[in-house]
Image (cartoon, rainbow, N blue to C red; front, side):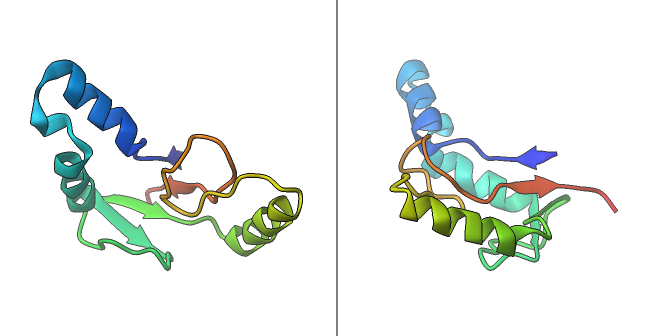
Length: 97
């Protein structure tokens, strides 16, 4: 299953709509870090959580795909880079072993 936190803009929009600062990305992100257990990732933020998150085994091939996208002047997004909803990036997934 693909795992995606969502964009900071989404959470900040909910904060602006509700007026509840608990919905701001600044306040939500630490909660993600608490329940994530990231494995085989150069972008490891936590290994203590109960939800296992990983990059797929084909991530190196995906990196080549992203590099080719750059050559085609596509907009690039790195792992957990939320500058825009558009572009390419390697998606993480969650799994249970």
